[in-house]
Structures are given as C-alpha cells and as structure tokens.
Amino acid sequence: MATAIAPTKGNTSVWPRNTVPLRTYDISQTAHDDSGSPRPTPLGHNWRQASIFLAASRINHSCKNDDESTWNTTLGKLTIHATRNIPPGGEVTISALATAFGFHCACERCSAPPAERRWSDERLKRLVSLEEEEIGDGVGIMATPLACLRKTRKMLRLLRGEGILDSTVLRVYYDAFQMVIANGDQARARIFAERCYESRMVVEGADSEDALRAKALVEGPARHRVYGMTMKWKQAVGKVPGGLDEEGERRCLGVNGGKFSYADYMYFKLQL
Image (cartoon, rainbow, N blue to C red; front, side, top):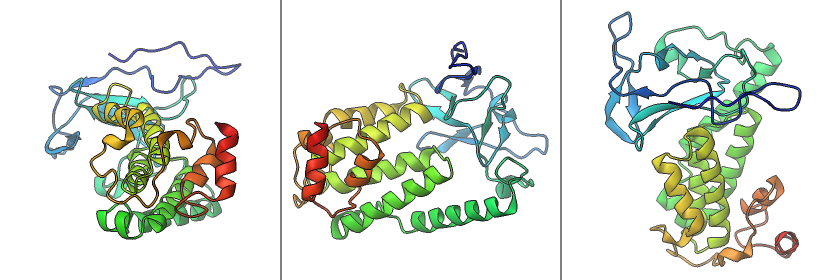
C-alpha cells in the first residue's frame, strides 16, 4: 500500500514527490478490457510476461503526464509514482501511446495553442531522431565517445524543455555513465550514476531493483563491467564533487572536450 503524506508546501497544498494517494496493485488483478482485447503491462525487463491491472488501467492518459507506472520486481507489484507535484484535486495521469490505443488525445499538451504545439512537436521530433541514432551503443562509446556525450546533452535539454521525467531520462543518464566509465573516467561516471539514481527514485521508487543497482554504481562506478576499456579520460572519483548544478552537469557532458579544460578544472576545484 502506498502511503499518503499530508499535502503541505508553503501556502499551496501539494502531494510530495514519490507519494500519491493511490495503492499499488498486485499482479493477480488482471482482466481484459471491454473490447475483449488485452492491454498488458510488461513486468519489468522480462518482456515475456505482462499483466493487466484493473485499478491502474483507469488512470487517464496525458502527453504531459505527472506520474509513471513501473513494475517493481522487489515488491512484485505495479507502482505509481508522481514525477512532479500534484495539487489537491489535480488529476493523476500517465502516458500511453494514443495512436496505439486508438483515441484522439485532448490533453494539456495537445490542447495548447498552435504555436506552442509546433515548438513541442519540433522538440519531440528531434528527440526521436536522437534516440534512433542509438547513442549508447558499444561502437559509439568506444569510437566517438565525445560526440555521443554531446548528443546526450542535447537530449537532456530537449527532455527538460518538454518537462519529461520518465524512462528516457534514466536511459540517457545511464548511457552517459557508460560513455565515461568505459574510458576510465570515474569522476564523471559517479555524477551520471547519481543523476540516474536520483531520477530512478522519483520514477520508480528507492526500493526498485534498478534504483538499487544505480545506487551501487554511485558508491563504486569502477564496478561496472565496461570500466577501463580505454583509459583516455582517466580520472579518479574525487576529481569532481557530487551534487552538481546544471552548469556542472553541462561541463561533465563534454562541452569543452573529452578531458577537462583548465576552466573546467577551476570550476570543479571551487566546488570541492
């Protein structure tokens, strides 16, 4: 059972992140929809198993959703986590593919003024284009890691522009982690592991299996199997402080080249 926490924040009542007044749903609560066609939810990484959750299936769709549903292997349940604050009486929404489910979407994003929708559509097209390039593949990580790292920066900027915090963000941070750890850079690897862990706690909860794996990489980035495939960016963990702001993250994402420039060095030194 998810715990509901009293909604208080300044003068506005909100539900804190990671907790919404919803229960979790056991795998045994399965059924078909009214048309007789199953709408299964994949159970984690095991795509051979899926289920339908009666109560969770009633949550409405929004292209600008405020919640994420994920299968928690540790709990053996589907969990719903808020990815942004929800005011009292505000609707809990998740993202579903409207074209796949055969409905016309009239959510906040799709009902926005034409000019705003055009900007949003353009950002999403650019995101799809970058995703199709598979920037986290093994060849790119080894052959052109800096170019791949810069693409992750572009993706994160587009995701923030759309207000998206979902599995795409988790994947981008993990890709960035692999790019730098494969090249021997434990300092930046720890930063990206932190970002991935922090995002997973919001999207999946601190007790999810993947969140616990991400936490382990924060504590020891060199544990990853691809560590040190090359040592061209070799850096010890302590060279970069934790808890960086967006400017620190931007520098970590290769704005000034694979290794740190003198300006990067001084920036991080001032924060240590």
